[in-house]
Amino acid sequence: MSLISLARHGRAVALVVGALMLVPLAAEARPGGGRSFGSRGTFTRSAPPPTQTIPGGAQPFQRSAPSSPSYANPGMGAGAAAQAARPSFARNMMMGIGAGLLGAGLFGLLSGSGFFGGLASLGGLLGFLLQIALIVGAVMLAIRFFRRRSEPQLAGAGAPYAREAYGARPDAPRPGFGGGAAQPAATPIQLEAADFNAFERLLGEINTAYSNEDEAGLRRRVTPEMFGYFDEDLTENARRGVADRVSDVKLLQGDLSQAWREGATDYATVSMRFSLVNALYDRQSGRVVEGDANAVQEVREFWTFQRERGGAWLLSGIQQAA
Image (cartoon, rainbow, N blue to C red; front, side):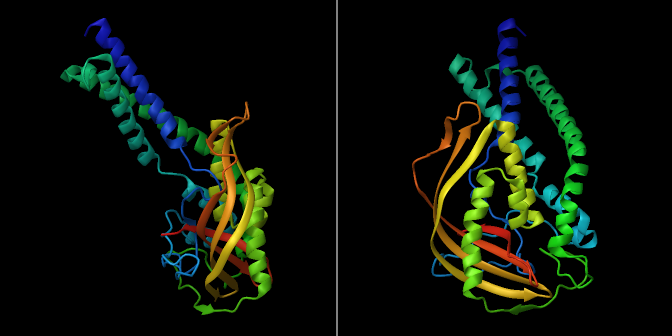
């Protein structure tokens, strides 16, 4: 292999390394970020009924923590939710490799050596794959190392709140879905004006707490599962050196989709059309790196709330309009 081919080969590997590092970091802004995650009790696998606000219904949950671990050991509720909130490394790895191969091909075209100019020979291809395997192995070891270090702290921090949210009583309903004993029967309930006022207030407060990276404020307003997802996003933003800022949140229209009771827990799913201003800022320079700090966006989402008997409403799920 000539020095020129070797240099091109090294640049192709560098592109793959860059893709492996950058692809998992991509994320949409604002709480929820255009994704559907959380739980709706026994209706987690069922789509909420459509409403006048969102007549097309909702998308299914893309991520939802199983109920059994947090029910069997409430102290591990937040830890289990955070584990479920983490994106699949295998999926991100494959996306990164694909992006790297595409980048290598484009580099080959630009340098005049063809789409896979540096990888034409069998030896070059095998050498390239060997380097990819070594790089992926190193990345996996690093992720496992940091994951082991972070898990005990996360579980310990979330334990008291998990017991407060779901209770330790034998008859406490299980959030989400999963195996084990039968779930409590769902009974329709009637909501009052104060409940709808609470939903509107939580819409603004959760967005504000997320924008301010106020973890304590989020814990008071969302379930441990949802806190795990939000905390993951905020941690990722900090690692990328960006800040997700949300402002001017205003509810434009809202309808009740479904309200029910399971044991001692009330649930309510509401469809909401609201406006906000959202952008990602560079933490060092304050420059907008994604979004528009002056543009008003309009969002349509289903938000599900839950409360223990006599307690306050907490956000337990967000679903995008279908």
